[in-house]
Image (cartoon, rainbow, N blue to C red; front, side, top):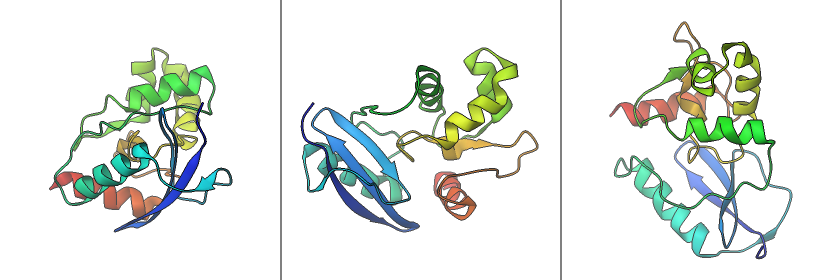
Length: 153
């Protein structure tokens, strides 16, 4: 694996800390990343371009390659389910657990969402409570609401 580089993206709803290797984007976090060197590579250039397009309403699907460098097999499967949720739609944690294939895994699914290291690109903000309420988001509910509002337009 190539060297890990990181940068800060200044979004309309707060800083997003991006980290990547040559193979793909590893992190898009709302909190500073505690590894890697400040820098830029092709993956980060493309991630920034795609975020600019997303926040300006011109992008609905991300194409930048992703590279999981953390997470259990279960968490990675849950994150892959998140990538299938279409832009502008939401599902409940219950629906996500059913997509995983085990309704009894609802709490584990919610916990895996909370550990999603690649926010926005893996759209955990599109998962809401069964009653339609906004629940848990690593960046805070204000950011989750902001992202959902962007996708309504």
